[in-house]
Length: 271
Length: 84
Image 1 (cartoon, rainbow over the protein chains, first blue to last red):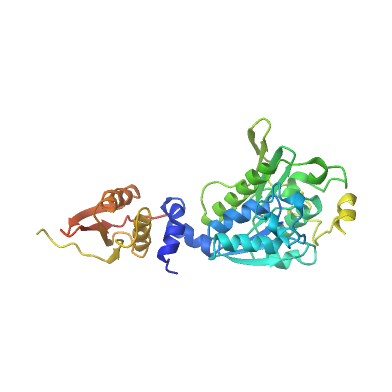
Image 2 (image 1 turned 45 degrees about the vertical axis):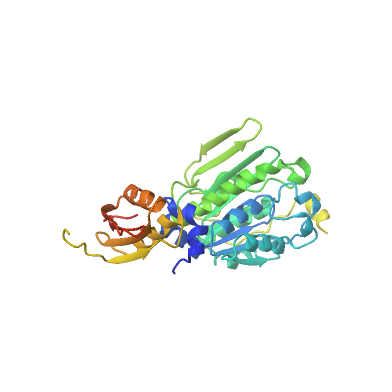
């Protein structure tokens, strides 16, 4: 694959970096990244991954753009209100970088459809806002042996970790099971500072880029937390993979994907 | 003239400006094996000042910067043996 002069210019700031270089940029251009959720986390991640020249970006979301999204979901604009989020996200990504092939999935992730989707991508970003889907993504990525980056944000706090099945703990090694429905408030109930989505979503994009280019150290076996009020990052070293983990342990008890129930307030407002 | 330098590849970076000059040279260098020599045709001024230094920073060996007398230079670079 030869680079055009336009591509050399577009990606020059990457290619100048010793750690990325020409080879790294080629890897990015051949990579396929799946972003699950075109919301607070998925928006900044998708913007930077498209700008970075990721060859194929898949984006999953069943919702349409709502006015309350625009405080943090920066890939959508006011004129996109009512539009499918995946369509709105696709248009913005293609505007940023026509080199990128965007594939949209206007659907919810379930035990029925997630595995076949995850299998066709190199790296997955969890940009979802609920525990049932977070556990579903973890279990699917473990089963498909696909690396992914988990993240969550609420109020002034955010966290992320990267899971490479077989190389460190998975999300379930650390968090076992989803909390009971309604035990943990959603962003809708608790609120979230918009820029937090930017910080954590961008960190997820960085993890994807580092994984693809083989650069630096990933957040495998580490949970990075960020408290915006105190302006403190903490990198928490996690225990090794749990050999008794229900999904990635030596004798997994979860061998089929589970559709946990959504919190009640989410379902009734979904309509 | 001293002995001729055996050239394994050439690239013309007179059609681009900083920092694409260096990037285009890097792409051309990638086509070669370690130890092979690339001749880089460049304009006087910024490229002639910066490209040799950037190549050196990346561990490649600068063999010669030849002034063509027409506002262009040819830089001869031997590619480093090990490139990660």
